[in-house]
Image (cartoon, rainbow, N blue to C red; front, top):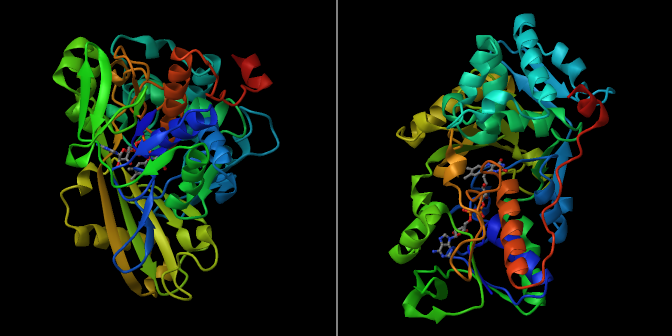
Length: 467
Ligand SMILES: Cc1cc2nc3c(=O)[nH]c(=O)nc-3n(C[C@H](O)[C@H](O)[C@H](O)COP(=O)(O)OP(=O)(O)OC[C@H]3O[C@@H](n4cnc5c(N)ncnc54)[C@H](O)[C@@H]3O)c2cc1C
C-alpha cells in the first residue's frame, strides 16, 4: 500500500499499517518528515522548529504514537502553567489535592490577573460544561454558534473573555473566538481542564521536532516498506470509481492495492481529478475549508534572560514564550555558549501577516523587554520570524460538515489529515487520530479489522456525579 504525505497523519497511518503486516511505501515531497510539526536547519546552522509544538495530557493518540515509534521519552510533561500580565502580576494554574473537576480550584481562586467578578462568571460557565458532561444544549443549534456567542449567553465579563477564555482557546484552536465553533471551545475545557485531572498537563518536546520521527522510518522499513523523501505526487488516476495509480516526478507511475492520502486539504483539492469530485460531493467541498495562520518568532540572546521553561503573556501580541535552551537541556539549542534561545508563539496571527519581519521583531522584542527585565540588558544576537500562513484549518462554526471521513466512496482511496473528520480541531492529536482511523478503515475493508484509536482519558467519578 502507498501513503502520500509524511506528516503526523501519514506517519501514524503508515506505522500502524506496517505493524499490521502491510508493506508500506511512503512518499513525501519535502526532504524531511513531520509536515507542519517539524524542524530544520537554518542557513546559519541553527536547528529550529517551524514553530513550538505542545501536547496535552488529553492527547491520548499522540501519546500512543510517540510510544510506538520510541519517542515518548523525548516529551517532557509540566504540571504548572504560568501566566503574566503587563502589570507583572503572575497567575499559576496547577492541580492541587482535590479530585477533578475541583483539582484547579485553589490555583484558580488565587489567580491574580483575574478579578473576583471574572472568576465568578468563569465558574458558572465551567459548571454549565460539567453539568452537560462536555456539552450544552445550544451547541446543537443549526450551523453551530461561535464561542464568543456562547460566552455572551453566559454573561462572561470582558476580563474573563480576554484573560481566560481567549488566552486558552486562541492558542489551542488557532482562531479568534468570534470565528470558532463553540463545540471545539467547550471540548478544550472539558477534555483539558474538567473531566480528568491529567488532561491539562502540558507536554513539550525536549528535542527539535524532526527527531521525534526518527523511529518511523525504521518501523516501516523493518517490515519491508520504504520511506521516500523529495518525492511529490503529481497526479491521481482513477477508473470507474477506483483509484488505479499515482504519478510522481518524471511521469513515473506507481500502483498499489490501497492509497492513504495524508496531505493538506488544499493540496488534495488540487490533485483530485474532477471525475472524483463529481462522483463524491464530500470531496468536492474540501476546498471550502478555510485556514488560519500562526507566527513563530525566534530570539537568541547573549545571556540568560528567563528562568521559567515557558510563560503565557496576557494582553500582548506575544502569547507564549518558550525557553528553548532550558527545554532542550545542555548542548542543544542555546545558540552561543551561555546564551539563551527563546521561541515566541502568536496564534491566529492575521494582523502580522502583512507586517515586515523587522517590525514583528521590534514589536515582540519590546514585549519581551517588558515581561522579562533581564532581557533589557542582554544583547539580541540574532532573530528569525517564521510565518505559517496556512498553519491549521480554521475551526469555524459549521466546519465539521465540510470534513470528509477517512473512508471514501472511491475504491482504494483513504484519507488522513488533521482536517478530516476526527471530531478534533487541527492538532497533532487530530492528525494521529485521522491516521489511525484511515488505517482502521483500510484494515476493515480488507477483512482484517483492528482497533487502533485510543480512548479519551476517563471521566472521573466526581465529574460524572455532578453531571
Ligand atoms: C506554526 C504551527 C504551530 C502549531 N502548533 C501546534 C501545537 O502546539 N500543538 C498541536 O497539537 N498542533 C499544532 N499545530 C498543528 C499541527 O502541526 C498539525 O495539526 C499537524 O502537524 C498536521 O499533520 P498532518 O499530517 O495532518 O498534515 P501535515 O503536517 O501538513 O503533513 C502533510 C504532509 O504532506 C506532504 N505533501 C503535501 N503535498 C504532497 C504531495 N503532492 N506529495 C507528497 N507529499 C505531499 C507535506 O510536505 C507534509 O509533509 C501547529 C501547526 C503549525 C503550522
